[in-house]
Image 1 (spheres, rainbow, N blue to C red):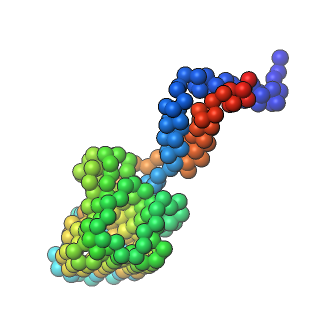
Image 2: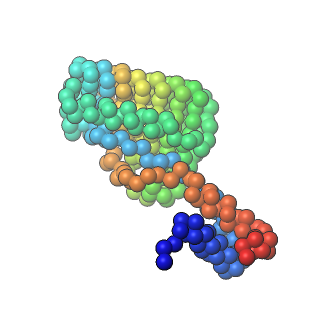
Image 3: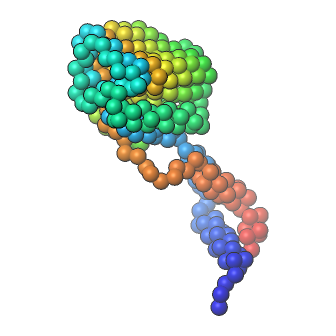
Length: 288
């Protein structure tokens, strides 16, 4: 006998209600509410930004690359549509200037930049920040961001921790500032899952240890001795200017090709369970 769509829908609804009722009976109300609230907090955190082939470069620029001093790039150099590389940086990796690979990397950078800019914010930061410790998430500056002290990124032992900074204008890391990661279960991946989406240009001043992938709409400048740059300097339209720097691109993070859950599923499940445990008998009556 063939079952109609209406009957199938009714059967699914009955099965779901039965499962929820049985769950409610098995777990004490107090513990149930805690569980439900935990699920409610499983909203999507920062999503890994997919750099595509831009991952192959420690430096990627649009108009030019200028290097003075003993600059070392561990991760490759790419440039397009410009073709001017001034100076002689030591490049351990690909060297692609105005070719198909550089064009593809720039196209992938545009996609990554838009992805980072489009993530839902989980917190707002303002202007000048000194000593802060942050946990994984998406942090938004409505205009410029200025780092004046040590910014500590606490991975909390999570191998999938991701930090995204959405900056409405420029990024400046002043002399004496730094970005460091703590509680990273893998010390070899510093800067891998940290992304700085900069709406204009970024400047790292003298002697600034820094972590993360800078995705700048315009240009990036690393002043004299801004060494220990664990990440990438990726400029879409402008130049990357280097002066006696060492840039080490971390390995590419494996990407999940499935459709990301924006948090609606855990929110819906958590809300349902919260109501179920909080109103116990009333809910049971409704489920009969």
